[in-house]
Amino acid sequence: MSMNHKNKHARKTALVVGANGVIGRNLIDYLATLPEWDIVGVSRRGGENNDRIRYVAADLLDEADTREKLGGLKDITHIFYAAYQDRPTWAELVQPNLAMLVHTVDAVEPIAPGLRHISLMQGYKVYGAHLGPFKTPARETDAGHMPPEFNVDQQQFLERRQPGSTWTWSALRPSVVAGYATGNPMNLAMVIAIYAAISKELGLPLRFPGKPGAYNSLLEMTDAGLLARATVWAATDPRCANQAFNIANGDLFRWSELWPKIAANFGLESAPPLQMSLETVMADKAPLWDGMVKKYGLAPNSYDEVSSWRFGDFVFSWDYDFFADGTKARRFGFHEFIDTEEMFMGIFEDLRLRKVIP
Image 1 (cartoon, helix red, strand yellow):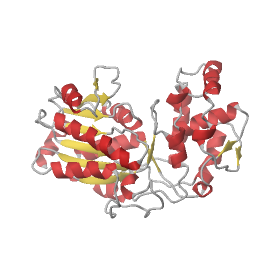
Image 2 (tube, one colour; image 1 turned 120 degrees about the vertical axis):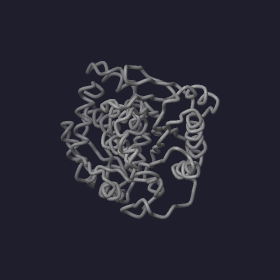
Image 3 (cartoon, rainbow, N blue to C red; image 1 turned 60 degrees about the vertical axis):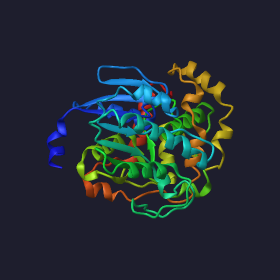
């Protein structure tokens, strides 16, 4: 412990896996503000290198490609794993998402003698939150549930692998994460912003599209910047070795209270909720969107890049409470929080500044 303490400002090299997602991108942005970190970002698409960040394009599902692309990264001290591949069913998610983590660790561990920590990004799926009403507030010590669940398989892999190694692990469990990253299928703030912009263009009020019960359930969110700071904290504080932490903004909300405020932010009236599948009703709106891009001089994002209706339908279907107990992270020393309403309004402002929405 004392050795770790002396080394707090020694050079560290982060391997951020899933570098273009909302979680990975915000983590890289935060690491770039910390002078002691060098950063390598890994994703399928790669990215633009600069003096602080080097990008590697690798197909993590391909063991040989992963070993080849990551095989020279001898300086890695911390792996931040935030990659995710979607599949149609919960069972089909397990194999690819476990394989990508295993291939990453198999490629880096043998060649990086300074590897000290592996950080795993999880979520409330560990608690069965995606299946239906679950025990709230969820705690890190809660009982497991019947598989399949890839988050659990990934953690069990690290738990089995860790004894006798040079590294420890941590697992971060955010609620729904919101922040900036286009082309990302898991960004609720973007779903709402595009839905609101299109409602406004059509002269319609903003209607909550989810299940009737979802309008009044208790929810929480996790800001991507807050999550980045918590992730680095858990990866570098020796007290957090081999521990899991729920990380959320620290407040609860109901859509019934927040929705009219979101409508007002877009200069819209809100009308009573009307349950509808966004995936269905928004499927034909690409020509309308392309017209809006021209009309308002927006950034040239395709409709696919800015819309993730299936994810919106998933979140808006939770007609049950959806929150966890955040006190463990506070007991271990992480005390940051953020106001969820301010988070949403800040992201909408950011999207306007970036010309993503009018």
